[in-house]
Length: 528
Image (spheres, rainbow, N blue to C red):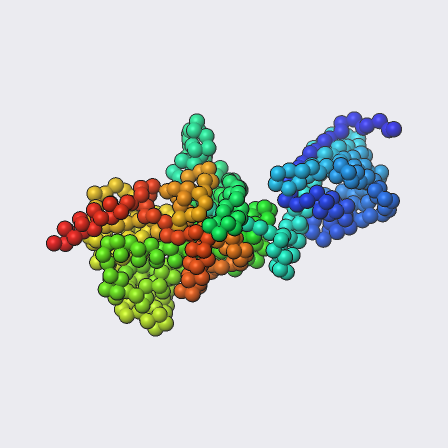
């Protein structure tokens, strides 16, 4: 046996891949396919094969530096490992071992590599550089094997094989910097911020990550599904500052959902705004079906508003309904629902062309008796009986004193359209809209803004319902595509599994029937 060379460099890398060991070992031994899906591998060829031993030729290129060698590999199948050692090539010495072992999330793939450049004088300077190249090479091999397995899984799914995917993934985000800090303190009560700018910038470069596994979510029918809560590392203000960066974060988060084999992904909060703007592009970069979750959110908002109106003694047929953000995806869906129910419908929006287009649709397609379009939110809500606040904004745009006594206000914003600032208004019914009661409690371990484990956002609920139905499809997509028929479909599916309009909350405060009765009496007193 030849002595080991001096100054031997060692690199190690590992990755958990959501696949069976035999699938990964098969890819590792099919080296001839590597150049097809690994950009850094320029050539990989089996020169000789004899049972569990084979000789292969390699040529890689990273950072414009080519490295070639021939190695002998030994497959140790019972232990799911592969030992390799170079017999000729650019490096004086190269050996290593791949090892696969069971992991709760699939298979842990580890590789240890030893090498030596062996060039006099130059070697001592070159070896750290070559070590970096080799590290990148093996990291890239693992990443590309995982991506290849994911592509194969979803290609099979698209051909109708639903057994390759399962469950759902929820993509959420923090709604402002203070929300981020609260969650960090939940995870570590001893955490103290010294510099807002430092934490903010670190957060902005942090990749999306899985926060929580939702196991055994059970429907009232007995059907069971499971899912993952993924945090997309941005806050809404970042969309206006760098929309492309947020878009790339959403795409990477979608890839993370694919890593875990989810059948469908929902875009929570402002990620759905990105989905509305770039949904077509996201679908090109990700194989997983993506739903914004806006159809069930809109249905819950409409149903919740009607329920609240009944409790306040408001007759929809004689009511004036205002939709703030009525040209957006959720707002336009709510407007269509109220178009032929309300006496007078007002929609607001920031873009005049979108307002004109929506006004025309409501007037002539949905038969609105009287419809008005304006960019003045305060004017729109001033004498409205029912207000649905659906604008996608990063800060509140309406003061709670803008509404008339007895008004019902359903705020769907995330963050809220209407400020949570303390008020002495006891004559209006204002609540967080688009929320769903759940058949199984959810506790993702951080503050998602939901007031109770038994209550969740409509977008979260939509993806769970679709997973329970095994309808892995982009049910809600784009902007302005939500029809009344689609809302009826998702209502029916949701009800079948035990989802429905949640109790009324404003912030974390439950609004009881007694409180609603008091509000109703106060409103009547103020009008008399």
